[in-house]
Length: 188
Image (cartoon, rainbow, N blue to C red; front, side, top):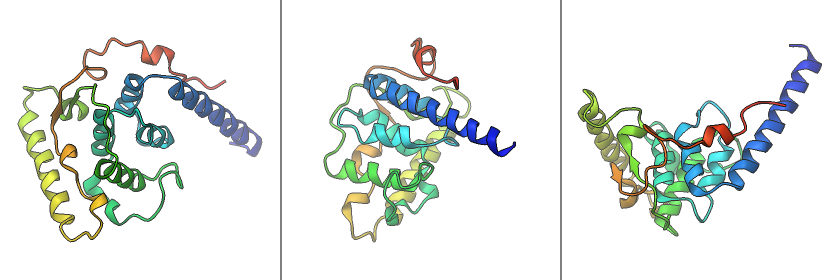
């Protein structure tokens, strides 16, 4: 792309992102959960950063984001970068979620969470038992890695070691919300 064309594209992309952030900021926590469920992790993460930092962020949404961030792939416990310094950095967000679970927590608990569905599988599928065993290994891996941490705020909190949470189902298979009809996706 030529310099002028690329600059115009970047400006249009920034305007789209601003519209998306405004949408999230004016939406209820159920829509935040939908956004997190369907978010493409190759894109900017500042929408997710904003969600996990909100007082009304649901526990299921925080857990969903934490595990979609693949915490066993990072030394997020040792991360010193602040969430938001780099809009693509996963580790600072994982640390933030962990610290919040171990301090103020995520008291809102209205939304259902099912790790199988979050991973793209249905209960009873041929791979469900394999996927569940993998998540249990992830729990063990993180717990083992965190045994020698001096900061208890970044350790895997008991509320984060769940495979399922009861509540209202707001994303995933059978979600009939008009979320993506309303979510801004087209550049101007």
